[in-house]
Amino acid sequence: MSSASSVLVASSSFLYWIPKPSPSKFSKFPSTPSLTPSSPPCYRVVCSGGSPQPASFPDLSFALHDALESTGIDAAHAREARKSFVSQIQKLSDIERETSICINRCVDLGRTSLYIAAEDDSLMSQSSVPLPVDAFLERLDDLSMGYCSHYNSVCRSSRQNFLESIEKYLYVKKGFRRSTANNQAEPQALDLHSVLTHRSGSAVMLSLIHSEILKMLRLWGLLDFDVEIFFPHDPHGLPRAYDKQKSKESDQPHIMTVQMLLEEILRNLKDAFWPFQRGAADSLFLRAANAANCIDKFNGFEDSGYRLASAKAAQHRLDRGVWTSVHFGDMRRALSACERLILLRTDPKEMRDYSILLYHCGLYEQALKFLKLYQDMKSSSAQNPSTDPVSNLEEDTVKKLIVRLNLIAMEGGWTRPWYVRNYLGNNSEPW
Image 1 (cartoon, rainbow, N blue to C red):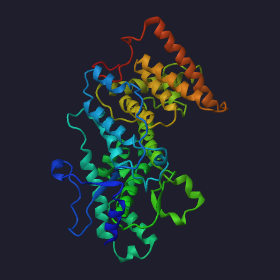
Image 2 (cartoon, one colour):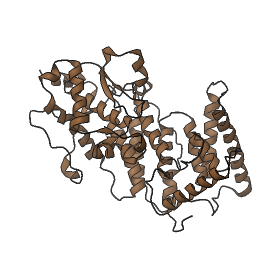
Image 3 (spheres, rainbow, N blue to C red):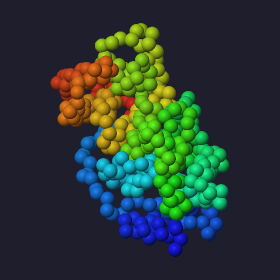
Image 4 (cartoon, helix red, strand yellow):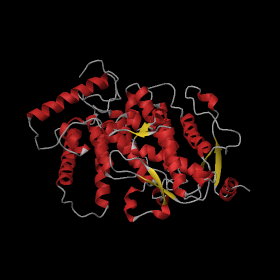
């Protein structure tokens, strides 16, 4: 029995195999030509049983999709993509969250990343056709199949040669490259389907692609030793695989787990599309709060005027239906990223950041609800009082925002006033 077959037999007790979809359905997105009949068949592997299923997510009643539909925008495809995303992350146990992306099994990271892209694509394009997730999964699988024609005796001569041959295949022959620091926030670097198309992406996207190739090669029996992906924290480095037996203590901060990868993908999107890009504060929350005049500190007339002009330009672009310029932000994609980070059960501060965006949308009741959830979660966790001035300013701002929202509720109820900026619907007026 071949090594590839033995992997299949040994794994049959807890895995099932999903054959690749037929490419004929997605002729709009051609993929790499198939290999010879002697090449190993390409399958994706997911858990079938034996994995603990966590409790279902509570109904958090997120605002984005309902708000879009209230303005006449069809959010059906976005809802379906979100539902598929949740179906994947619900499989995450505590152990799986801390598992390396090179060996995880229960969550299909490629598929999950494409569901993220599918929702955002629907929000931006408002297309009647959803993003063809299966077609791009096939393209991802074809990358692994394409390596087989490069596998030779030199690759088999040592582990190092084998891993270097994969890097050469991915970064030289296939031409994948890391986007430069100045273009890090460009959309094509942050969405998996765009990275597969343009072959230029962020470090986290290249890490995902690299790990998916390694997992497929392990499935076929070509990889029979433990590897890790070295995730670079500098602006220009490329993710690279290394033999885990040769790992050093200094490599630990560069190991990417499943939870870290999904958080990084969503935080990159949140940072890139945050609607309040301008401001002296590094905190996204404080930038948005400053724009809402929730901070006592005044940065000067010149800075305030520049920020106001930038906000007006951003609003003009949004109202004309231009949603993809990261230089001015995108309220829809920022809200979507926040909602999915909350679902991923990351930092409670995601609820706080989500609340300030809801405030700017005039969704005051929901904003207060998530601010209170944030405070409840923060108070339930045993933490020492922070001595960081930025954190203290953030907490003071949260309190002021809660007071303001309570006053709004007492004075006029939760009805959104006519003068609130409409970030979600289209308006023929510039501002």
